[in-house]
Image (cartoon, rainbow, N blue to C red; front, side, top):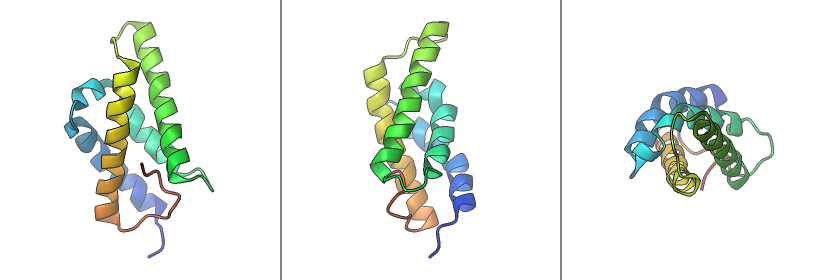
Length: 111
């Protein structure tokens, strides 16, 4: 099966908000769910990157979001806790997309 980026992005846009909010302690990442969703889609477009590299890219964007939210006073997010929950959430999103979309290329952002 040929990888279809458009289908992947569409699935992430639909599934990620639900899955990320539903993972254990998903409330800890709730303010960052749109950021995580966008970052997953962005990471998938990094040509030649491994799944681990793509996940690291997403998590670096998450940490930037934590720093921004905390600096702006919109929230007080624990960077370590958010990183852990987001990491599990990313894995759950990719696993769910994998179930619906079918096998992803080996370079997909998997944990």
